[in-house]
Every structure is written in structure tokens, then in C-alpha cells.
Length: 352
Image (cartoon, rainbow, N blue to C red; front, side):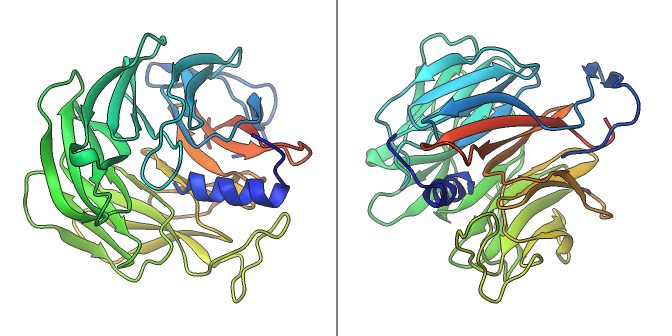
């Protein structure tokens, strides 16, 4: 990638990504989360600094952080170390974003889409396998792994109408899980697809058993990130369109509360605002906290039931957050670099 201005780098990351610094007391001690031992990392730590690379997707399995940059899938140990290659797919494209390669994980494999294809590669980097392709040359957009199946949106190149397709993680017959969908952000669990429609500004639940869709929330402009847990859906929305202007966005009519992190029960109800920020970014959730990016200013955490927000890291963060039992991960850039430089960082989750 050639010379890129800071403003252009930030704008590009916001497009591709829409998709904590706690002070410790005394000496760090290891904490256990289930069978996992977590070494406290209360300040952000750089895991990788990647010159001339624009990271687009970021995931973690607790041992490694994996990312894609449009032509390669790479990984680095969560404890730090050398960057390793997992797969190469140069020249592919997905949807309207040239070279984007969404990622998902199971215990042994990395799954990704490229162009019309859905692919699987072992985490140790053996040759990728094509599991399935979208029909009629349609684009494969997004990817999710749940209950032994890989899901993706097949988006028509002529109408932009989308169908949710599924194939077993080992490969096999492709099934249509849902059809007649608008293209937009989405996540799945074992039972449902949750989709945000940019045009309709709605958040919907689409059962994978073919039952009728349910509208969960309306009047939700600028949805930029989504996550789901066993009881609720979480999303960020942004009522004001911000433009890049240095370290903080220029938001005509906007403020530090223009963007919100929201939650609604899967059973329905009224949306609850959990947090506020300048701009809406990615979302992750665990049993205790919802995590979200304000791309211009911070990485944040808030209890899933509501409460005080915690600023986990005070810095611009464009891709993520990814999470595992112990840590949060995100991508920032190096403002001093003349070309795009993706900096992958981690920090301990609140309370660990």
C-alpha cells in the first residue's frame, strides 16, 4: 500500500471495521477463569505492529489472535511472539469491499469468505479447503460458526437481496436457512439470525427454523456493531454522521453522547442504553460485560445489566473488539507512520 494520509487511514479503518487501561495495585497476580489462567495486563500491550497492512477483521481463540487484511490471514500468540501466516488469498473480494475476508473460528479451524467462496483452513496453516460457494456467482458476505454449521450471506449481484446459507463445518450440502433478507450487519447463535437493516434502521430476529421474523427494535440509525449472548442482543448505533478531523470527529450537531451501546432481550421489550460515545464501533460480550469501540477515542466496557462504564483504553480503535476469557484485543494505527500501520493490542478484561 502506498502513502496514505492519517485522515485517509482513519476513514478507511472506520469503513472496514464497521464491522480497557485499568490501574492495577501491587504486583500482578494470575487469576483463573474456569480452566484458564489469566496474567493481569492492566495497560495496553502491543502484540504486533504491521507496516503497510490494513487489518479488517480480528478474532481470538485464547491462544492466538487471528486477523485478515484482504489478502492474508495471520496470527500471533496472545502472550506475544512472532507473527505467523495461516492462509493467503490475494486478489479476492467480498461484497462491495475489495479484499475483505471476514473470519470465524472453531476449535481447530479458521473459516473465511473470499469472493463467492466459503473456505476452511486449519489453524496451523495447512492448505485452505473450499467448503461451498454462493450460487449464481453471488457474493459471500460475512461468516459465522454455530452448532456445527458455517453461515454466510449470499448477496445477489443484481438486486442486493440476501439469503442466509449454511454448510456443515466439515463440508457437505448447502442449505438455505433464511431468505429475502436485506444486506446488513448480522450475527447468529444456534437458533436465530440477528440482523440490522441500514435502510430500515431496524434490528430483527430471524429464526433459523423458518418461523416468521420478529422486529426487536426500530429507529436505530447507523448500526455499526452487534453481538449476542443467551439472553440479549447488543449493538451500537450513531445518530450523527461524523467526519475525520484529527483526534476527535467533527460531528455537526453531535456530541460525546451521539453514539450509544444498546441492549434488548431476545424475548422482546424496550431497548436499554448501556453506554455513550462520539461514534459507534464494534461490539463483543461475555457473561459479565459488554465491550465496544468508540473508534475515535476509546475501548469501553459496561456491565451487561447496566452500570458504570469503564474506559479500558483511551485511544482510537478501529477494528474489534475481539475477546477471550482473559483479554480484549483491538486494532489502532501508528499516527507517526507515513503508510498504513495496523497495531494490534491487548489488555486485561475488567476485574482480571
